[in-house]
Structures are given as structure tokens and as C-alpha cells.
Length: 106
Image (cartoon, rainbow, N blue to C red; front, top):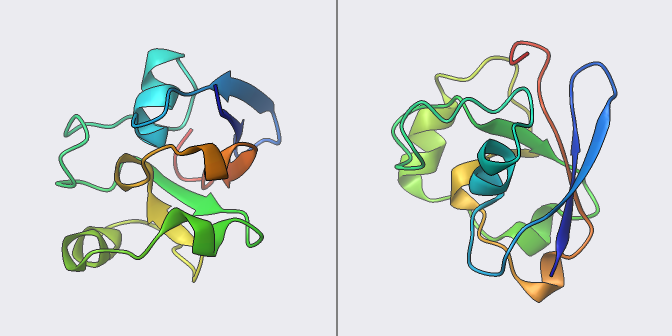
């Protein structure tokens, strides 16, 4: 099963197995990773699962949708590597993915 490395704003690392087809958000919520609230339950209707994808992995996570772009406008301190974790579905190619939570989500 592919692994995701979640890094909280304070630098704590959590390595979690996330099933293929599940979202990065679901992996965080199911494993009580701090910093991912997922208030909308993964419907791309909020920005409480905002993450910074490690630059080495960003292109592999796919394109942002128009809706995701709109929701990221509500997130604090976004950058070019910002994604909503609910919009990144796990694949074998994402084994080892590194995402960081913004300081505003703790």
C-alpha cells in the first residue's frame, strides 16, 4: 500500500498507508493526523484540508480543478504547491508523497 508522509506545521512527521483510490485527506482523517479538519467531508467545498505538496511530488498529484482553485482562495498562505488533500487520490505512483500542513491549520 502506498505511503504518505504528513508533516505538521511544527515539523512532526506521520507516515501513513493510504489505500489506492482513497484521498490524501481521507488518509489523514482516518488516522487522526492533526492539521486536516476536512469540514466538508471531502466534497471540495471548504479549504480545511489545504496542504503544501513537496515540490518533487507536485506534478504527480495532477491538475487542480477550477473548483479547487476557487476553494484555495479561502485558504491562508497558499503558494504554487498548494492543493486540497481531498482532491489528491492515491495511486502507486504517489508512494512516498510528502505533504505539509500550513501553520494556520493546527
